[in-house]
Image 1: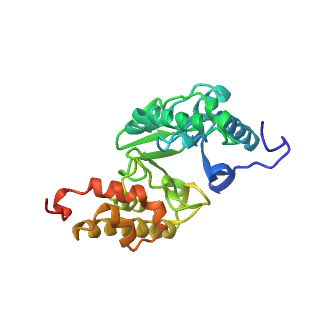
Image 2: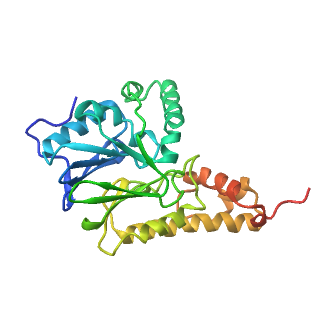
Length: 291
């Protein structure tokens, strides 16, 4: 089922030459197409088979060429649960991800399926549970180039942040950077149980080094942004990391850190950040209590 008729205008909007972004209301997910003479590369595939069929219809409605490759920006389900549907709809194609992401897709998906098995009142429970998992097939550790014929696209692992397996996609000739969930516009970036809050700011520094002042930046969720937006988000994440370091160095217990810190975001969003930050700090940066 789709929410658009065949006569509807394309959902994909061209944000730079031969780079189209479609924004979906559910989870404010962005799906991006990068066009070349050999076909289209899709970055992320949405969070269920049903939603991916909608995306596939939108690709056909755009009419910009055949879909010839997929990229998963990391291992979280809302970015790759559409993989199998895209292959069913368009045929076999390479699915790119970092080695870490590929190696952790199954474990991450298992947690998602278990969660929705227990969440019996979620309106999308059945479509999520009906999704078939399809793992990435092409992996890399630091950087790789994808050939689209008359255009090269760079996949870069800038470091650990939202997860340990994040990648960004750079389209040099169009001055576009796709940030995955290292960058979010609809809400503050989600710092979860598999995030690296102390390293995230440095990872964003590397991503910022790939941008110019004119770069079009596509976040994993929310509206298209620019370099200045990413710089502001980096400042917030840096403040969170430095606040954790400061509190720990002064001997503030982890259990009191959220209450005592001056945070740029709602402290309720930072429970995992504080727990993981304290856990990731070396002993030399913690003022441990005497026992």
